[in-house]
Length: 65
Image 1: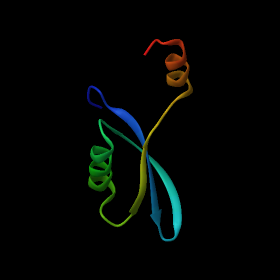
Image 2: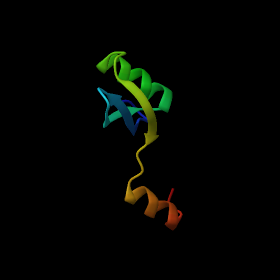
Image 3: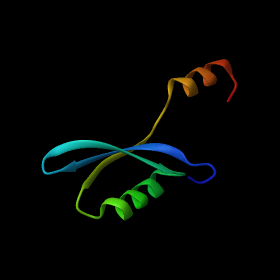
Image 4: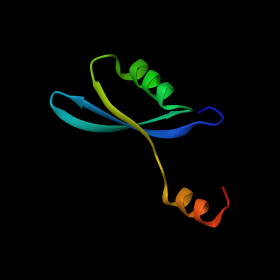
């Protein structure tokens, strides 16, 4: 994992089934690239979203971030 990397949820569709995978990257584009390196071109990527934890949400409310 590199400096500044975040966890992204990658939603994919394979054989008619939706699945979620986790990928660490700096940007959503890099998350797609890393996913394709690991799993190949076969799975269709439906969406890539940054993982937001409850802790991050609470820090934003308190003005710590």
